[in-house]
Amino acid sequence: MSFTATLRALPLQRQLMLAFAVLGVALAMTFLVRGAVEQPMALLYSGLEPAHTGEIIEELEKRGARYEIRGDAIFVAQNDRDSVRFSLAKAGLPQQSVQGYELLDEVNGFSVTSEMYNAAYWRAKEGELTRTILAIPGVQSVRVHIGASLRSGFARSEPKQTASVTLASTHDLSGGQAQAIQYLVALAVSGLNPDEVAVIDSQKGILAGPGIASANQPNAKAETQEALLEDKILRLLEARVGLNNARVSVSVDVSHERQTTSAVMFDPDSRVVRNRSSGDVSESSGGTAAGITSASNLPQANEEPGGASTSTARNSSENVTYEINETRTQTEKLPGAVERISIAVLLNDQVLGIDPAATDAAALTDQMVADFKQLIASAAGLDTSRGDDLTVEIMPFQAPVVTEMVAAPSMMQQLTERYLWSGIKILVMSLVVIVLAFGVIRPLLSQKGTAQDGSAAGDDIFAIEGGGSPDPFVSLKDYTMGRQDDAAAILQEWLNEDRKAAVNE
Image 1 (cartoon, helix red, strand yellow):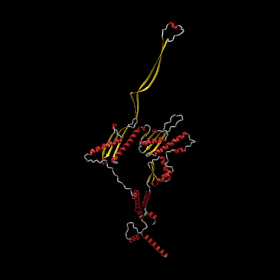
Image 2 (image 1 turned 120 degrees about the vertical axis):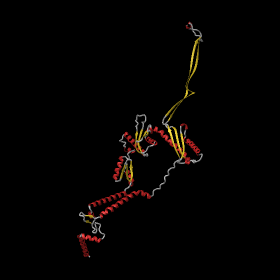
Image 3 (image 1 turned 90 degrees about the horizontal axis):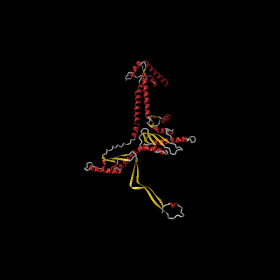
Image 4 (image 1 turned 60 degrees about the vertical axis):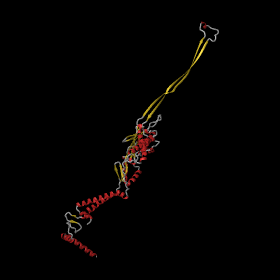
């Protein structure tokens, strides 16, 4: 009996069971093959703008590449990642959202006014600065705005230039990095002062800018001095106690106020000529020898000489004005002046060579501490009158935990780690397929189907439904007695076959 006839002979319930079994085997094989050939996913791009992400997804769909979206990241097959990335780059993806000097390539000098050209130029300048700042590690996004003031032909002074940088970072930017951004923008724009560049973090506020730079300058100076002192003292101590046997902590207090002091000093013992003037005065006087009478009014023929006398006097004077010597001094104290230095030093007593059980251990320890204090005070330039503090302690250090060296995995271990899970999946799915094939499908096909009237349907005439006897002759006798017509038909078919064979011979 053919396979199709065997299926038709089975009851409807067994046909359905067989169909579900075959479907399960097919699904299991599909999952097995997919798990065996499926490649792990690798990161393609992350942190892109939504518009650029959509363009990349559209291009991947056109190319028929398999991808996954996890948050703001796009994953593709690990073996195809490099080729996909190169092909996308050839197509100009992801596109640069910021344009630089390439904007000027599209400017036509014959159809563009000076105002339009200046606007395009400053846009290009902002784009180039944005690209440069984005190259800083930890910076995710940047916007640069330059307040360019165009000088008028009638203006006598240069216009004031300003700029602002708004950014988002993955970690806190230091004061030095913010100052570096200020100088980067200021040196790229002519006439821009670095103090006029504001650096703003979208999450943390103003990092640097007008007014902030002067306020943060003392703190930055203090941090710099602390780092320099720690490094200097640590190198000096490690020359004696060895590497990693000394710990140094330095705290520098600086002033944050700007002070201006004016002083006037007078020296009464010293005189300074302020003004000097001199002059000469001449005086003249005259008289007669005789008295005046009525006869003196009468006309005389001759006048007698020697009748009168004249005298002249000359006086010289000098006026000198003195001023007391005066000295004016104006002193300005800028923020950042050191007000106090505190130093704490911890030394490992295990490397100093002092026996704790010795009778003079305490005296040796005190002497060694005093020597270290004198050495550190001289190196750091401590001033006790200013209130500087120095603490030196000798204590045992905790032994560092030594991490055992782990040997590099062998080729077999790498293969096991890479393909173990895939091998387990293949083994499990193979077992499932074998169980379904031999445990479900084969028994269904080997069993006889029963007809609607309950008669047996099969191609084995010797199969016994109720279990049967192990003796084939008994089975044949029972079958012949129960189905005489069928037995006669079988015998007649055998005789006909023998006759045909005899005729052919």
